[in-house]
Image 1: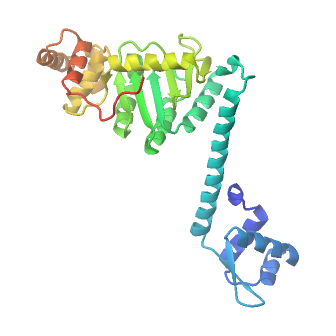
Image 2: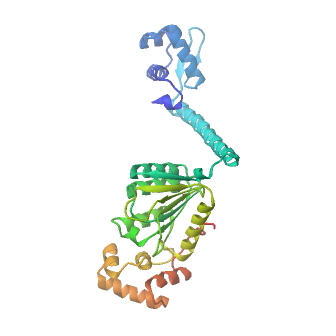
Image 3: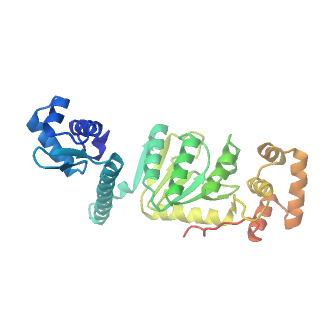
Amino acid sequence: MLESVGVDAPDEEAYRALLASPGCRVDDLAKRLGRDLDELRDTVARLEQLGLLTTAGDEPVRLLPTRPDVAIDALVAVRRAELDRVRDEARLMLADLRTQEQYQPENLVEVIIGQEAIAARFAQLLNGTREQLLVLDQPPYASKTEQSASQVRGLLREGVSVRGIYSPDSLDVPGGVEKAFSLADAGETSRVHPQVPMKLAVFDRTAALLPLSLDQLVEGALIVHPCALLDALLEMFKLLWDQAVPVVPARMDPLDARLMTLLAAGFKDDAIARQLALSSRTVGRRVAELMETLGSRTRFQAGIHAHRRQLLGEESPPPEG
């Protein structure tokens, strides 16, 4: 179990034996484990260097194991710091690569084939995101929606800014509305737009993942690294963001806010009634009341007017252009 923090299996065995019999001598431990005495002395030296034990008394010394929570937490912290240094070094290597004359333009775009490969690359990019994730959400999906939603919640807990623009189709899939609102409750800043042109995810503004085609099969994808194409994708996201309306209410009745979100997404009364577990007649009446109150001619316009009047709101500013 402890190999991942630098403790070999024979040394871990000795440490576990010490936990069961603290204060024993080296020769006693060697007999208990059936190990050569000189070999075990080397093990004791390594465990002491790792902070897993201390020695006490004169010859013969007694071996005192360090509490596992204290010792292993310290080893985990050391290993985490080492991994952080490796990651920082990788960033420096990448920066050097980009400045080299032999850096080829074809390396700016990767082509990923196959749903499993796309899902794996998406998870890899997601796990490496530290500051901001931008998403245009639209089916079909290369991985389970529940899995990706769980990963996004993990980023939110780590303080990563997540902004999502949902298409009507993404809200219409089973569980789509619940997913959007639950992520918003978890801290995602999300909006809905009636015409999301494509699927897109942008990770820390340094890489974008998008499908090769806009049909219903997710069999190929592109990963775009910093270049003019990535800049254009970011600008497209900003334009869509400015046109979209918030998913989550700040100042409205929760039911009215969900109704307004589905309204702006282009849902018909029957579909809204199904999503909110209301009758079509109740939905139609409430929609008419909201549109009259807001002075709106169209459903999407009602969402825009609600946003401008701050009936819907967000705590965070829109993404930078």
